[in-house]
Length: 478
View (cartoon, rainbow, N blue to C red):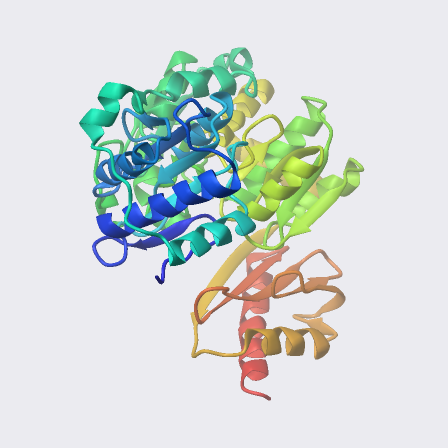
């Protein structure tokens, strides 16, 4: 059995590896794991919450998983309709479920589907847990199945709408009366994903004038990847400009990531969203706590942590590392460069809906648009710019490359002096002006990712170019 879980579940191409037969086998392995190692199984035990996104056959895959879990005598609570992953995670925790399952491939291309396994806290199952599920897969027998209609009739499967639970909880994190003062013109863009209707409903109730685009069901996502990065947000940028809106908010395929556009149509990346929100929580909400960020996330977080005397944790790429720290320490905020960000009191996973609402609250509190807030942040911390290059390569020794990049590090690059090296995930060079270059081999494919942040776009490009040349030289033994 070749099925393997990555940092946030199992993903595969629909109709190739992601088939009904394989989905049922994975569901049986999860049932075996929960029964044998967590002590679950009976219908009287805590339930298992299941949700699904808008991808092709997601609802049917979710029903197939439910039938297997019901066949193993688990009580299943299945979403009535497609819904975001953070909404499912909140339901897991609120309903005291023993686990959650989300049928989604998140921001991946439309040909993919996947299964995310959630622990009782609503966060992603740990690597240790998913490894044990994989061990169960290697010896899994024929899946036990109880027909959907029969399981529904006897109460082993129940259908519900998780939105009311989520909305009640989100009001404990977002100051809705403050947000309502702004009465902003907003364009929301769920990118045909499971976040459709969520921001629109909440913001409309708060008195905003909301236009939702790309909110209709479209399993092909209109031919793009449902990832809220600038290259896929031309429709949002155009809508903000055409409708003279104050802000545009985008979420990915399962709404655990955020992207934004200011009132003139300029893309605001997750680095800025993370830094703006942290600064607001510290300055205006008077909140305190540690901060967690991945190695590829902006240095602005470091500067804010220094300024406010906060403990800062830097992790390898992957929200599971952030979640682990958030559950072990008093963490105010955690996030990564891809747009997965959350705050204390919420489930330990990224939530694009929550982050969009906090941006709106921030705008209302200051009485300023997003463009002005970014300008204020840059005045305080200085300007930072960011870019990344993904290079497909021939297979190479990742450990050997990291060793050489660390041991043979240049003393300066692009006219900047090297002040420290971080090899927590790849090799990150930090320079004397807080600019940095990260060279990071992918953990799953022959891809080399080169990241940089610097004080000007020109310096970013110069560092990226030198980083690519350096990695090429190191891989080729020069």
